[in-house]
Image (cartoon, rainbow, N blue to C red; front, top):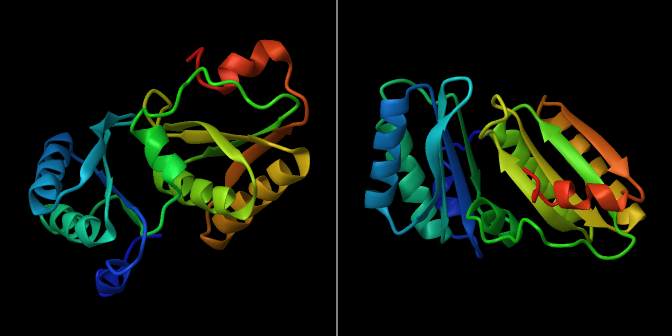
Length: 204
């Protein structure tokens, strides 16, 4: 999932919005990387903070033509290679909205909607697997949490008809397996009403 900077020129020509992730080993270096990204191009900084266990995440989005040079500048200025990095040239808009806090945490799911929960060990896996899941099925992203307060783990919740949720989970699992990663998933066919606000993140 790590982008090749030899291919970034092609990514910059993509339509839609792009999302970039840089995971650093040092906190000071992480802040500096975020600063370089913002100064390199007009991008929206979605996350720039330390997460457990002692890593630092920099996440930003924008037009591909802006995100590409921002990611290059942020990465190439590091003293040591990044722990992880990711470039999604045509990311689903719901993912950016969730990361930016533009999703109502208490939003109710459609009546009778099934739920699918995908737990990932890395944020890069989460973002890419969520993007694949949303592109593969008619589901709605209800919650997404990227490492903050989770000991480095990450998860997302999708809602929809049972068959669509199953398709989304299958796509996430297949993608992760293809990358040599694993994800844990569960499908809740008819979540109890008392669980709804927690699935939506309202109880977090």
